[in-house]
Image (cartoon, rainbow, N blue to C red; front, top):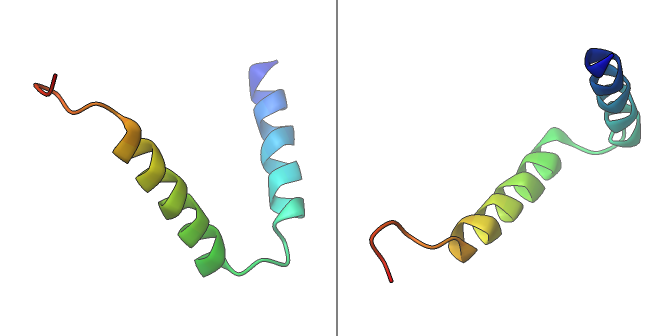
Length: 46
C-alpha cells in the first residue's frame, strides 16, 4: 500500500513540475537544503 501512495505522489509531483526546467528545480532544492543545514546545530557546538 505504501508504494502505491509513494508512486501516486511521485506522479503528481512530476505532473506539477512538468513545465519547470530541471536546473530551476535543482536550484530550489539546493536553496532549501542550504537553509536547513544552516539552521542545524553542528556536532560539538554548544
